[in-house]
Image (cartoon, rainbow, N blue to C red; front, side, top):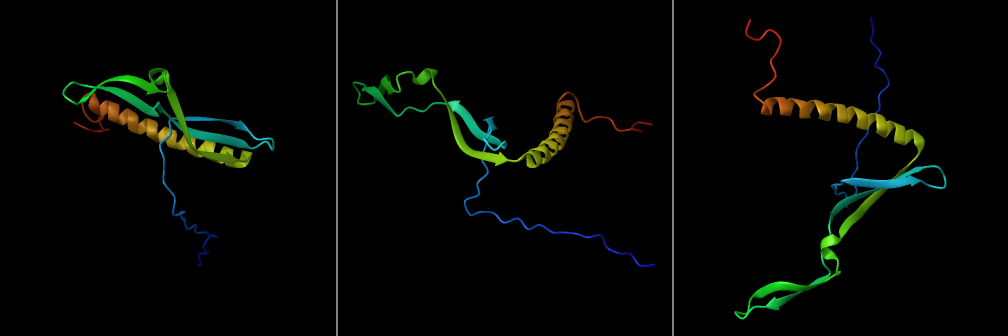
Length: 129
């Protein structure tokens, strides 16, 4: 009896020399005029000053900050947008399904970690019999 192989395809991944995974903790977006989904990924963090001015202490050291630009530095947050993605409905649906699978696996790992931290590894069936 002869076994025929099912058709296969192999994908080779080629990375742009500038490929650099980045951290994101937020996304903002919507739809393009063509009906495609667009997402802009950002990292939210406190703002850094453009410049600061400090007093000079009598000993010649750096003293208290007297001025900052922007003036409301302590009340300012930044959403640094590093990348964005645009996709059609079919691609968005595939990513949605893939992300759901990944989140399910991540949830199982987090649950196992929490159980371990609360008193040891979960018991296995037949243990102690």
